[in-house]
Length: 252
Image 1 (cartoon, rainbow, N blue to C red):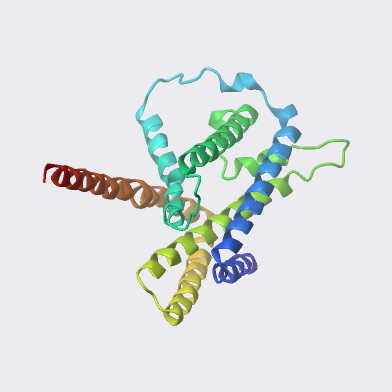
Image 2 (cartoon, one colour):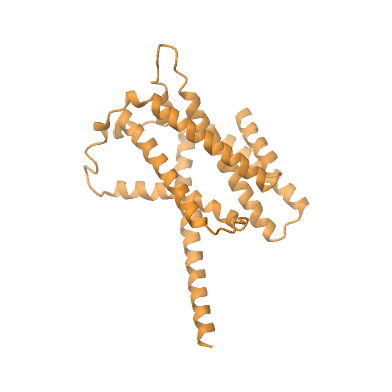
């Protein structure tokens, strides 16, 4: 409960600031998370066996494989949260696409290295049976019989990552509401109301770990629909309408 209060309280303080504060916190947080991941990869390198990754696609393309891809897309669908921020970018160089590709490459290699590290440590069968495999992996770290604080890096990644995601999602929602002309008083009431709902929902969901993971599995499909399917449909319709409007203008 204290941890949830700290997370939500910190988020309320940050989202009430300007977008510059959001950007600074996000940049610092991402850099710290990346450094923690690099250090963790170095500390656990002695506990990994690359032979555990083979054979790749032993059973071929199965329904479970397709289902795993769909669920992964749902979790990575949060990239759509960045869309409201694009309207706030003021860059005369017009290199958004290039910078976005670089960021995606960094993200992809981080996820590949992290996932492969877990599989090389526990094998796929054992890894899927663990609730927090990354945390369990760090508990194996021990050098000179006293250096065994690998959990610190994972907690920074998990707690820091969720805090950044919560703040960015919250502020993205406020950007959309401000574009629709929401008043300051209404915005403050909305921030408090959403924070209270988030706190109550978090307390209820975290009472039982089994229920929590069931809810997280359902959340994957909710995220898939909200952040991938619906934006894809909306932008596809918008692209078709724009192309038709250009054709009508050119013909007239």
